[in-house]
Image (cartoon, rainbow, N blue to C red; front, side, top):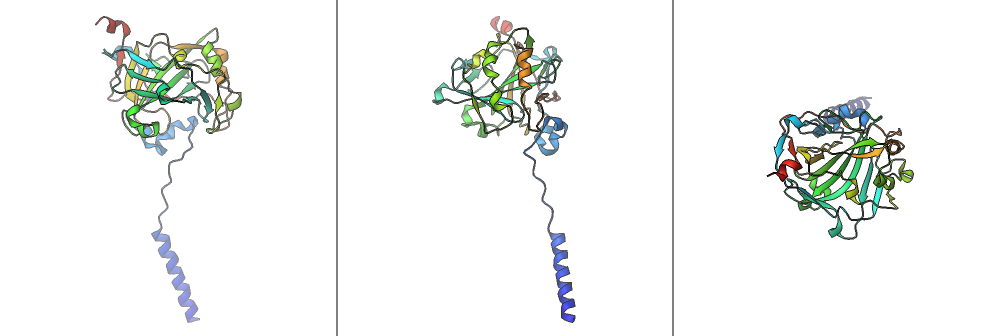
Length: 293
């Protein structure tokens, strides 16, 4: 009995030491996120609580005039194999190029390096009153197109995203018009990607050159330093937001809402509200004033 008592105390001691020695592991940030929980993003992705976040309101009256040269769009007129993906948060389009030389890229316009096209995607609302991420003079638009590029000096997107000058994103406001936008008729082939699957890609039967998605005027734009508008909210984006919108029909906007998001719900309202400007400066490049120099 004495031996059994000693063994019992010994086992209790081991359990006590184990209990006080093993600390619970700190939970890792979840890979999953949703727009319904966007106010809590910073709790899991610390950068989302930073002071250089996007989107913002772009106010003409307080913007600083800039004499940037015209932005140059190379290979934007190329027709390349294009693929659509529903990643559970938006519909994304990427290109598959046979040659590194024909991938679209942008230069100039105040950018110090060439930035190569990576993907484009959209944000839209539940109705026509809101949906864009940026606002211009306090006005939201029904939707917004983002054309994402990475700095070529970093070799690829994954490497570039770790640097303050890693990404350059073109923000294009989308308004409504009575007639269809012809370019979007080719983009709206969502039947094969209604449900979210990042690995499933649907090839476009009729690829669209990126130039068809640009506004009529690319010489006037806002410029500021900000972040990705989705987790992890990396503050590594040079934003160029054109003040001239493109237009699609209500029918075409409604097609986006047929998509299903990562929560199994109708995909709508997939935009982040405007963030505080803090100490940042917003520049405005006017095509008229630049030509007058």
